[in-house]
Amino acid sequence: MMLQAYRVSIEAAGIDARPAWADLVKQDQSIALSKTPQWTDCICSSDHFSDATLLFRGDDGRRLILPRLRNPALPGIFASPPRHWNLGADASGFLSEGGPPSPRETSALIQEIRRHPGLRTRVVVGKEDAQVWASAVPSTVYSIARTAQVLDLCGGFSSVWSKQFTGKVRSNCRKAERRGVVVESDSTGRLIPVFDVLYRSSVDRWAQERGYPLTLMRWLAQRQHPLKKFATVARRLGEYCTVWIAWRQGEPIAGIINLTRGPRVTYWRGAMDKERSRGTGANELLHRCAIEAACAGERQSYDFGLSQTADLKRFKGTFGAGEVPVHIYYFEKFPTVATEAKCYDAAKHSVQAAMRLVHTGRLSQSAR
Image 1 (cartoon, one colour):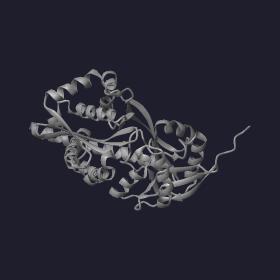
Image 2 (cartoon, one colour):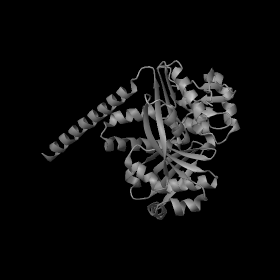
Image 3 (cartoon, rainbow, N blue to C red):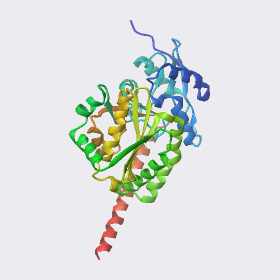
């Protein structure tokens, strides 16, 4: 007997969806931070977005939510979440009353998103949601496949230390302690300015490593990740936003920001002074301390997030983190994202080529 198609309809949007959304989140502490009103408020308070969350009602009465934001400067463009606000494997997707939506419900919700007015909706999904979405989203929808890395904390820290961490990580942690590296943590926002200084230093290093003009890289970083963004998240999340700083001889040399909700800890941002931290093992010690604290708090996973480079991916893998699928979908009225991506890549390669020529010219002049 053929099952009748599951049907959903939009019941409320934006602030009108907030009471039902807050109620669903209150019922289930395992819901990822990226799917909470609290995270949407962090985005709206520090960036140019407004809440455009959708509340759906299934034909069986079940409530389903798609956390979603709108940039008022770009009418008809929606994101769940916006770029530069991803939270690793715990991406957005739907949340629903009484547990995760079934494949049948997910298919109905996706069809409703495609019918809903708007020029474009960006949706990022991870973990189990990614598998369900992959089978439900039409192949004509433009998508990007990524991976996040997540460390399983089951068994406690002693098990993670001895069975998950590689010998290199354990050795570097001991080296850091021998070389006088001290790790400090804070959940009041006090260390955010210290982290920001390290972050701006990292931006300068990334510009050099990736072959980008320093001025351009600094402008992009200030636009995408300003101090206000870090400070707002720390203020709004309170004790669930922890800044970890590694110090040596009274100087900060590396730092990370971790976010916590329910069973998950997410490594959100990292930075370091490469010259001062070189050969100290500070980065390994930072994560070791954060992971030990997560285990002490009976968290179940430590999400290292998405990796921008192969080196960063390898570094995270040394802690025993396994790969988790993440997919980014673009539902468009007019298919332009693929072309935009090609233009972006071409512009990036042109800039890098120009910087190489400039660098080669400087070397030639210095040789003369």
